Image 1 (tube, rainbow, N blue to C red):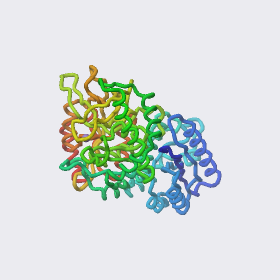
Image 2 (image 1 turned 45 degrees about the vertical axis):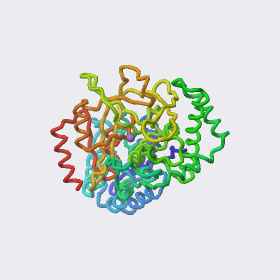
Image 3 (image 1 turned 90 degrees about the vertical axis):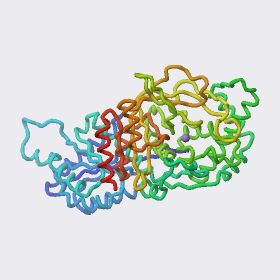
Image 4 (image 1 turned 60 degrees about the vertical axis):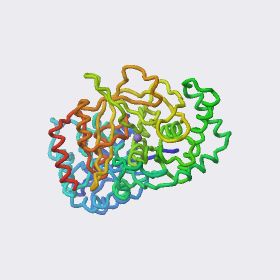
Length: 498
Ligand code: MN
């Protein structure tokens, strides 16, 4: 499945015709140099395209509408080199529908003390023009990223790169289609939600099928295709047989290979990029898809368990946002399972029944076949591993009845102290920020779920920014969180987002 699209970003410089042709020629020349430098930066993964300098209401409106209509354009970066009267921008901004970035920069880094005169001042006045432009964007209530600093500065370039990732999330969100096999697990509250509102806010299409619709695809997979994939599994993963007969073990693994091929064929033919299963609604499936779903997640599909379509869409979103990232560490559905409460070593062991994405794995990945304590199917094959260490984010999108809230927790991933030989699932282990007790208290206060969409490669700020573009509430639990202020923020948000 292709998840890398060729996205580009447009660079639009604002000015006006008051300054004369010579000044406008320099404005265009400076803009070209800036764009050239940004495109050469290793902090920026997407191409930036320079557009002609915007000096009139008509050209501004036309450019923003062209950006809307260009499927390759994922956002527009604006900068006012000189003064650009902001009433000219109103109609263009009003009609613009893609992520906006305001690069508040200046061509020269230093004041040219010896030569500066009023001509120089009039030509290099973004300190002045960008405030006029910023005013109208604020007055119109348009969400945008403002990045301040010299364009050659690596921190500035890194922030542009970071914003681009968020912009891809904004643009790609409306292409996510989630396929639900069965419904949400009965009586569970937090995996439920308003699918109509999700389509309005995020653009997600969330459909449902009878699980036996996919069983037909699974049953139709040829034995030769299954055998070839099983061979691939055996070449790629270690075997922990738990004393099972080798032929019987292989038969169980083959069921997952058949499911991987069948489910993916169904998703491709019906244009879905995320999938939801439920261990209690397996129809004609012989095993709960475990290894099969783990492999599909690794290929870039979103996944949610027990009907959790919100997590499925969020995992897919994270995979899209990080698709271009070099050395990405991984993303997955995770589930808060069990605690270590030993003072000084507190943490949450993350796993699921089976379905943790191997993109997060560090070290060996093994195959095991073990009973599932729930449901009434064959013992499913699954991939078993422990996950990478380092900073990461765990997110939970919850439906509060009148709105969505995205909870974003910065977490510190660690290795568990000792091996867990009897635990036959992929796991991760982390301590939430700011500390275990505060992190868990804040998470529960915010109504966060037990399922999360997890990423090593995205930041708290990127997800906050994404939520802002989507027009939904976000709340952060990180090193700055304290419970008194957190409770106040929840109360204030409940007024603002009503
Ligand atoms: Mn679960």
